[in-house]
Every structure is written in structure tokens, then in C-alpha cells.
Image 1 (cartoon, rainbow, N blue to C red):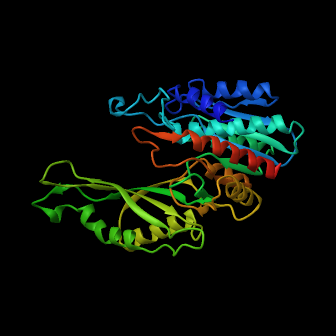
Image 2: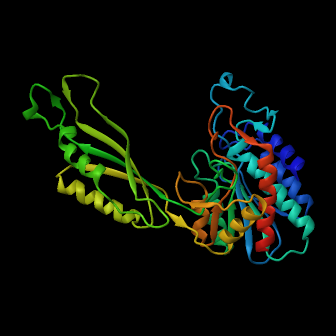
Image 3: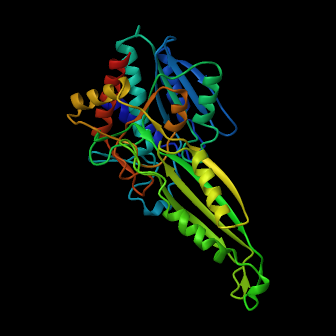
Length: 375
């Protein structure tokens, strides 16, 4: 298993699949799976390629989910080894996407192959949902596949997303939920004028200060046993023409909330509107909901993951809901159980991204064990 995972991971890393360009990664995976009797369905949307592969036709459906796309490598001269060369030095495999997430993708594929070889008449269905649109827009990838599957009544019961969830050692952390992400693009209107004649103008920056103070100090909730409190951060703020003698006519403020299950996006939107009205501001606001919060409680999938890690890695993982968003937020809309388990995240999106070869081999064993416990 170790050599198969390593060989596949290197093959994938050597393909510069900058989002959403798959560069043939999914074709490599599809050809392997098809030889073992997996049905292959291509679900392309615009410039994004998506693969839905299945072995079996009955419930429950267990799906591995992952992405072949990676973020740009940046200045390649800063890399110790070329970012798409998949060099192995000692126990480390280097390359863009090694940890996020071609390494775990290779482990998932090989685990699925090994399980099917050993259990050709297994119960339920083993599936893989693979996209090339996770690192960028995330609009034509997993979300569109999920919509397609739901429209035809095909739901995923258990899903393991191979995002790099581990912190200090393999398996020490499993993501069993994520906070929601809501962005507000706020335009506060004023009246442009000369700074020497403020009575003939209306400065939106000055007018907005009390509102911004309330917005950034308001306590949305106290969190709960699964989630930290909802947090808000201003990401961008702009006003003015660049001249020191012009009162700006408009203030732009962009803010993002990472919110827990104690509030909803509608509650947040209504409260912000209430604040804006309270401070008498003339405004226009655009909202962008990247994903709602989700939580998988201690049911069959989480139990299987914990038992596999305790047996193979000799570690009891911490269940965590922190961090950013992932495609798990779309899969959770199907109502099944969803967790994220993958290699260490310490080098993701960085120069000299890398992953432990030993960890990938162990991860493959863990993935296969989870399959064995659920199907």
C-alpha cells in the first residue's frame, strides 16, 4: 500500500493543476478505479472537471471527497526543490499539493482499491467525489455535484474529506464541523466636498465611526460545546480620492463573520441592518454566504474514525470545528455524516509544502479501516 500511495501522490503532484485546471489528475484516478469495476461519471461544469466514481449500488453510500486543484506555487526560486517535481528527501515528499491535498487523495484512492479487492461483494457503496475547484471560486465543483446528486435523490450517508486536519502529529485532530462564513460588502453614502467647507459636505467616515465601533464590539453569542463564539473581522476599508483636500463621498467596508450554530445568517443580516438604521446611515450592502455551519455529532462515522485512529495510530483525536471552510460545507447539506481527516497542515499553501511518506502510508491504512467498519 505504501508504494502505491507514494507513486500515485508523485504522479498527481507532478501535474501543475492550478485551480481549476485539473491537468489530467482525475483521468489518472478514473482509469485506476475503472479497472476495479468502479462506475465513472464525469460532471463538468464550465471550466471545472468533477469525478463521481462508485463501486456498489446500494445504501449506505460512503464517499471519500477531495480535490486535485492546488494554489499557485508563487516564486519557484524560493523553493528548495521545484514545486512540481515531487522530490523525496528522507521521509518527506515535497511539492505543491503534497499536503493539500494530493497526498491524502492518493491515500483515499488506494484505500478504496484495497478495500474493494479484499471485499468485492461488500455491502453498500464506496464512492469518490473529486473536484478541481476547491482552492479558488468553489462554484462549479463539489457544490454543483451535490446539487446534481440531490436532484436525482442520491444522497451520501458518510463522507470523509481528506483535508489536512492534523496539527502536531497524524490523527491528533479531526474536523467534525465547521463554522459558517458570511461576508458583508457595505457602501456607506456621504456627500463629497472640500475639506475647508465641511458644512457643505457629509463625511461618511465620520458618520460611520459609531456604527463601526458597535459592529466590531458586539457579542453575537458565547459559542457552545462544539463551537467557539462567532467572530467578526473587518477585512478591507476604503474611502477618499487620494487627495488631502477632498471629503470622500463614499466609504466601503468589507467584513467577514465566522459564525457558529448559535446564530443564523438571517439573524446576522437583520442585526447589522438594525445597527445601520440606529446610526442613521445611508447605505447599500451586499451579502455573500460562503457556507453555513455544520456539525457531525458522535455517530457512526465519528466513532469509526476514532476507533481506527486509536487502533492504528494509537492516538485519541481531538474533535474540532475551527479553521476555515472546506467542501465539507456543501456535502453536509445532504444531511449525512461528514468529517475531515488528513495529514499535517503546517506547510499547506507555503513554500516547500511537504508531507511525511510514512504518514501517507498510515493514513491509507486508517482510511481502509474506516471503510471496513462502516460497510
